[in-house]
Amino acid sequence: MLQETRVQNIDRQNQVEIFAYANDIVVGVAAHIDEIDAYLEAYSQGWSLERMPALDRTIMRVAVWEIIYNDDVPDGVAIDEAVELAKEYSTDDSPSFINGLLHKVSSTKRAL
Image 1 (cartoon, rainbow, N blue to C red):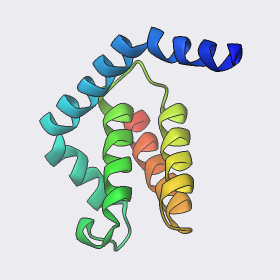
Image 2 (image 1 turned 180 degrees about the vertical axis):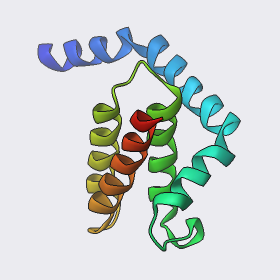
Image 3 (image 1 turned 120 degrees about the vertical axis):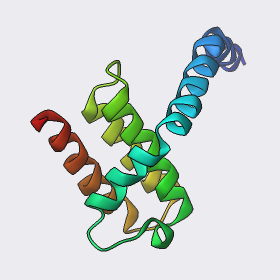
């Protein structure tokens, strides 16, 4: 019981930061959706955005925003978190597809 209370307190400690970052993601993705989708289309190798599962598109949009527009998140972290979300919530093929696409986006950014 004591440990359960402790976990709840830890979760609540960072609520302001968590909600602020969630807001940054939503605003950032919305502001750059056309550019983000252009990256996804360019590196999806024959998969149109409409063919991708909606969840995969959303995961990748957030990760691309973090990779391209948010210098506070290392590219590897953005990619790893996206892959983990896909493993947990999407299709069996999604993690490897997302991993490959996001690595290409990250590589392109470094080349610029």
